[in-house]
Image 1 (tube, rainbow, N blue to C red):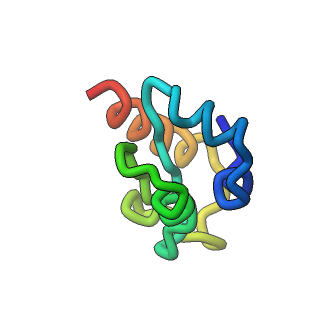
Image 2 (image 1 turned 90 degrees about the horizontal axis):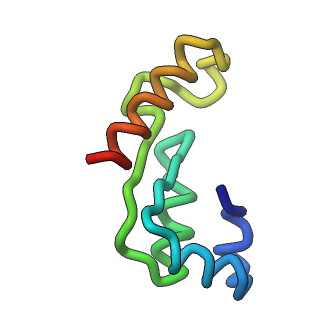
Amino acid sequence: MFCTAGLGGRISGILKTTEAAEGVLAIDGCPLNCVKSSLEQAGFSTFQHLQLADLGLEKGKSPATEERVNKAATRAKEMMCS
């Protein structure tokens, strides 16, 4: 797990670690897709993108219940293991 603000701020250590990662999963909590955009603006194009709204989890209206966390974690695992 890395700091999205570090990507946007072009922090060299975070950029190098991201470049060296076996896989990158960008998780966005709303349709603005800030994490995806931060990765793209930092020059990354090879990553998985999980938009929580696509799972029916609307920002500000979907409290972090065990069921919702499991739903997001299951989808993330599917994306990274495929």
